[in-house]
Image 1 (cartoon, one colour):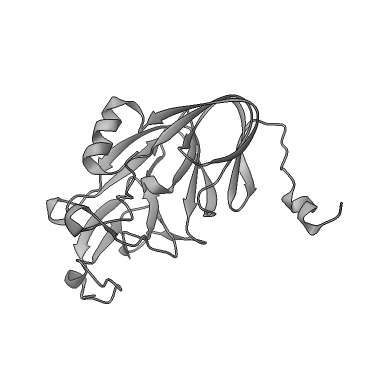
Image 2 (cartoon, rainbow, N blue to C red; image 1 turned 120 degrees about the vertical axis):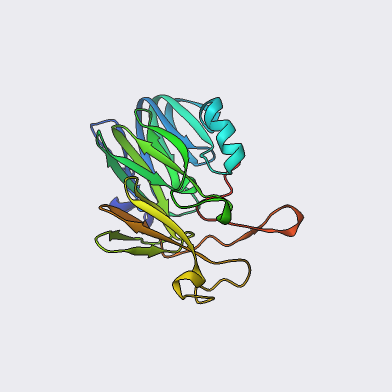
Length: 239
Protein backbone atom coordinates (compact mmCIF):
# COMPACT_ATOMS: atom_id res chain seq x y z
CA UNK A 1 0.00 0.00 0.00
CA UNK A 2 1.36 3.41 -0.95
CA UNK A 3 0.40 6.90 0.15
CA UNK A 4 1.99 10.16 1.21
CA UNK A 5 0.10 9.51 4.43
CA UNK A 6 2.78 6.95 5.34
CA UNK A 7 5.68 9.38 4.94
CA UNK A 8 8.24 9.59 7.73
CA UNK A 9 6.83 12.86 9.09
CA UNK A 10 3.55 11.13 9.97
CA UNK A 11 5.04 8.03 11.56
CA UNK A 12 5.21 7.67 15.33
CA UNK A 13 8.23 9.45 16.80
CA UNK A 14 10.44 7.08 18.80
CA UNK A 15 12.84 7.93 21.62
CA UNK A 16 15.07 6.03 24.01
CA UNK A 17 14.07 8.28 26.93
CA UNK A 18 10.67 8.32 28.65
CA UNK A 19 8.74 11.56 28.99
CA UNK A 20 6.76 13.99 26.86
CA UNK A 21 7.68 15.23 23.41
CA UNK A 22 5.92 16.58 20.36
CA UNK A 23 4.59 13.98 17.95
CA UNK A 24 3.77 16.91 15.67
CA UNK A 25 2.65 20.52 16.13
CA UNK A 26 -0.89 19.43 17.08
CA UNK A 27 -0.22 16.30 19.13
CA UNK A 28 1.73 15.43 22.26
CA UNK A 29 3.28 12.02 22.89
CA UNK A 30 4.07 10.84 26.42
CA UNK A 31 6.32 7.80 26.65
CA UNK A 32 5.03 6.78 30.03
CA UNK A 33 7.15 5.02 32.62
CA UNK A 34 5.42 5.86 35.87
CA UNK A 35 2.95 8.75 36.18
CA UNK A 36 1.92 11.93 34.40
CA UNK A 37 -1.05 14.32 34.56
CA UNK A 38 -3.25 15.22 31.59
CA UNK A 39 -6.41 17.11 30.78
CA UNK A 40 -9.56 14.99 30.92
CA UNK A 41 -10.71 14.06 27.42
CA UNK A 42 -7.39 14.86 25.73
CA UNK A 43 -6.32 11.25 25.04
CA UNK A 44 -6.64 10.37 21.35
CA UNK A 45 -4.72 7.06 21.38
CA UNK A 46 -2.48 4.91 23.56
CA UNK A 47 -0.43 1.73 23.41
CA UNK A 48 0.74 -0.50 26.22
CA UNK A 49 -0.40 -0.97 29.80
CA UNK A 50 -1.79 2.41 30.85
CA UNK A 51 -4.37 3.24 33.52
CA UNK A 52 -6.46 6.42 33.57
CA UNK A 53 -7.87 7.90 36.79
CA UNK A 54 -10.05 11.02 36.90
CA UNK A 55 -8.92 13.50 39.56
CA UNK A 56 -11.34 16.39 39.20
CA UNK A 57 -9.28 19.55 39.69
CA UNK A 58 -6.61 17.96 41.86
CA UNK A 59 -7.35 17.60 45.59
CA UNK A 60 -10.23 18.86 47.71
CA UNK A 61 -8.66 22.30 48.26
CA UNK A 62 -8.23 22.90 44.54
CA UNK A 63 -11.68 21.44 43.87
CA UNK A 64 -13.30 23.99 46.19
CA UNK A 65 -11.27 26.83 44.69
CA UNK A 66 -12.17 25.71 41.19
CA UNK A 67 -15.87 25.65 42.01
CA UNK A 68 -15.68 29.13 43.50
CA UNK A 69 -13.53 30.74 40.79
CA UNK A 70 -14.47 28.83 37.64
CA UNK A 71 -10.77 28.25 37.04
CA UNK A 72 -8.90 24.97 37.24
CA UNK A 73 -7.89 21.98 35.16
CA UNK A 74 -10.10 18.86 35.07
CA UNK A 75 -7.35 16.28 35.41
CA UNK A 76 -6.71 12.60 34.90
CA UNK A 77 -3.68 10.69 36.15
CA UNK A 78 -1.87 8.47 33.67
CA UNK A 79 0.05 5.57 35.16
CA UNK A 80 1.82 2.51 33.83
CA UNK A 81 4.06 1.82 30.86
CA UNK A 82 3.24 2.73 27.28
CA UNK A 83 2.75 5.54 24.79
CA UNK A 84 -0.09 8.05 25.22
CA UNK A 85 -1.07 10.56 22.54
CA UNK A 86 -2.86 13.76 23.58
CA UNK A 87 -4.47 16.60 21.65
CA UNK A 88 -7.07 19.34 22.17
CA UNK A 89 -9.25 20.41 19.23
CA UNK A 90 -6.24 20.45 16.86
CA UNK A 91 -4.69 23.37 18.76
CA UNK A 92 -0.95 23.97 18.55
CA UNK A 93 1.00 22.20 21.30
CA UNK A 94 4.08 23.65 23.03
CA UNK A 95 6.32 22.17 25.73
CA UNK A 96 7.85 24.29 28.50
CA UNK A 97 10.59 23.04 30.84
CA UNK A 98 10.33 24.45 34.36
CA UNK A 99 13.47 24.58 36.47
CA UNK A 100 13.65 24.87 40.27
CA UNK A 101 12.65 28.42 41.19
CA UNK A 102 10.55 28.95 38.04
CA UNK A 103 6.85 29.74 38.29
CA UNK A 104 4.39 30.03 35.41
CA UNK A 105 0.93 31.60 35.58
CA UNK A 106 -1.26 29.99 32.94
CA UNK A 107 -4.81 30.04 31.66
CA UNK A 108 -6.24 26.71 32.89
CA UNK A 109 -7.94 26.06 29.55
CA UNK A 110 -4.50 26.02 27.90
CA UNK A 111 -3.07 23.21 30.06
CA UNK A 112 -2.76 19.91 28.18
CA UNK A 113 -0.44 17.79 30.36
CA UNK A 114 2.36 18.07 32.89
CA UNK A 115 4.84 15.96 34.82
CA UNK A 116 3.61 14.74 38.19
CA UNK A 117 6.70 16.38 39.73
CA UNK A 118 5.10 19.80 39.14
CA UNK A 119 2.63 21.40 41.53
CA UNK A 120 -0.01 24.05 40.89
CA UNK A 121 -2.45 26.26 42.71
CA UNK A 122 -5.34 28.53 41.73
CA UNK A 123 -4.63 32.17 42.53
CA UNK A 124 -6.22 35.53 41.84
CA UNK A 125 -4.38 37.57 39.23
CA UNK A 126 -2.87 40.70 40.77
CA UNK A 127 -4.90 43.82 40.05
CA UNK A 128 -8.06 41.86 39.21
CA UNK A 129 -10.47 42.78 41.99
CA UNK A 130 -14.18 42.65 42.52
CA UNK A 131 -14.73 45.49 40.02
CA UNK A 132 -13.73 43.06 37.26
CA UNK A 133 -15.60 40.11 38.88
CA UNK A 134 -12.25 38.58 39.79
CA UNK A 135 -9.70 36.88 37.57
CA UNK A 136 -7.97 33.63 38.46
CA UNK A 137 -5.16 31.59 36.95
CA UNK A 138 -3.24 28.38 37.62
CA UNK A 139 0.32 28.92 38.87
CA UNK A 140 2.71 26.02 38.21
CA UNK A 141 6.05 25.55 39.94
CA UNK A 142 8.64 22.85 40.53
CA UNK A 143 10.90 20.90 38.20
CA UNK A 144 9.48 19.21 35.13
CA UNK A 145 7.68 19.67 31.82
CA UNK A 146 4.31 21.14 31.02
CA UNK A 147 2.54 21.02 27.66
CA UNK A 148 0.25 23.93 26.76
CA UNK A 149 -1.98 24.66 23.78
CA UNK A 150 -2.57 27.80 21.75
CA UNK A 151 -5.06 28.66 19.05
CA UNK A 152 -2.59 29.35 16.27
CA UNK A 153 1.07 30.35 16.40
CA UNK A 154 1.63 32.62 19.43
CA UNK A 155 3.98 35.52 20.00
CA UNK A 156 6.22 35.55 23.08
CA UNK A 157 6.54 39.13 24.31
CA UNK A 158 9.59 40.07 26.34
CA UNK A 159 8.31 42.43 29.03
CA UNK A 160 11.00 45.08 28.91
CA UNK A 161 8.49 47.95 28.66
CA UNK A 162 4.89 48.41 29.88
CA UNK A 163 2.95 45.69 28.07
CA UNK A 164 -0.82 45.47 27.50
CA UNK A 165 -2.68 42.35 26.37
CA UNK A 166 -6.29 41.42 25.74
CA UNK A 167 -6.97 38.99 28.63
CA UNK A 168 -8.80 36.62 26.28
CA UNK A 169 -5.63 36.25 24.19
CA UNK A 170 -3.15 35.91 27.07
CA UNK A 171 -2.08 32.26 27.44
CA UNK A 172 0.58 32.36 30.16
CA UNK A 173 3.23 34.59 31.68
CA UNK A 174 6.09 34.66 34.17
CA UNK A 175 4.47 34.45 37.60
CA UNK A 176 6.80 37.14 39.00
CA UNK A 177 5.40 39.83 36.68
CA UNK A 178 3.30 42.61 38.16
CA UNK A 179 -0.16 42.55 36.61
CA UNK A 180 -2.99 45.04 36.39
CA UNK A 181 -6.48 44.90 34.96
CA UNK A 182 -8.06 47.96 33.35
CA UNK A 183 -11.22 48.90 31.54
CA UNK A 184 -10.40 49.71 27.95
CA UNK A 185 -11.73 53.26 28.19
CA UNK A 186 -9.18 53.96 30.95
CA UNK A 187 -6.49 53.44 28.33
CA UNK A 188 -8.29 55.45 25.66
CA UNK A 189 -9.25 52.34 23.70
CA UNK A 190 -13.00 52.59 24.21
CA UNK A 191 -14.74 50.07 21.92
CA UNK A 192 -11.66 49.54 19.74
CA UNK A 193 -11.00 46.03 21.11
CA UNK A 194 -13.81 44.56 19.05
CA UNK A 195 -16.27 43.75 21.84
CA UNK A 196 -19.91 44.01 20.84
CA UNK A 197 -21.31 43.37 24.33
CA UNK A 198 -20.18 43.90 27.92
CA UNK A 199 -17.13 45.79 29.14
CA UNK A 200 -13.77 45.37 27.43
CA UNK A 201 -10.72 44.92 29.65
CA UNK A 202 -6.98 45.02 29.08
CA UNK A 203 -4.25 43.43 31.20
CA UNK A 204 -0.99 45.21 31.93
CA UNK A 205 2.35 43.56 32.70
CA UNK A 206 5.47 45.08 34.25
CA UNK A 207 8.76 43.71 35.55
CA UNK A 208 11.13 41.18 34.02
CA UNK A 209 9.69 38.17 32.23
CA UNK A 210 7.55 37.12 29.27
CA UNK A 211 3.92 36.89 28.16
CA UNK A 212 2.64 34.35 25.62
CA UNK A 213 -0.16 35.75 23.43
CA UNK A 214 -2.20 33.64 21.01
CA UNK A 215 -3.66 35.07 17.77
CA UNK A 216 -7.21 34.20 18.82
CA UNK A 217 -9.72 35.11 21.49
CA UNK A 218 -12.17 32.98 23.39
CA UNK A 219 -15.68 34.26 22.55
CA UNK A 220 -17.94 35.31 25.43
CA UNK A 221 -20.43 32.66 26.51
CA UNK A 222 -23.91 33.03 27.96
CA UNK A 223 -24.20 32.42 31.68
CA UNK A 224 -27.27 31.75 33.76
CA UNK A 225 -30.01 34.31 33.29
CA UNK A 226 -28.58 35.34 29.91
CA UNK A 227 -25.74 37.33 31.48
CA UNK A 228 -22.43 37.48 29.65
CA UNK A 229 -19.53 35.79 31.42
CA UNK A 230 -15.84 36.55 30.90
CA UNK A 231 -14.23 33.68 29.00
CA UNK A 232 -10.52 33.39 28.21
CA UNK A 233 -8.62 33.27 31.50
CA UNK A 234 -11.64 32.03 33.43
CA UNK A 235 -11.92 29.39 30.76
CA UNK A 236 -15.27 27.76 31.61
CA UNK A 237 -13.38 24.84 33.14
CA UNK A 238 -15.91 23.30 35.49
CA UNK A 239 -15.26 19.60 35.46
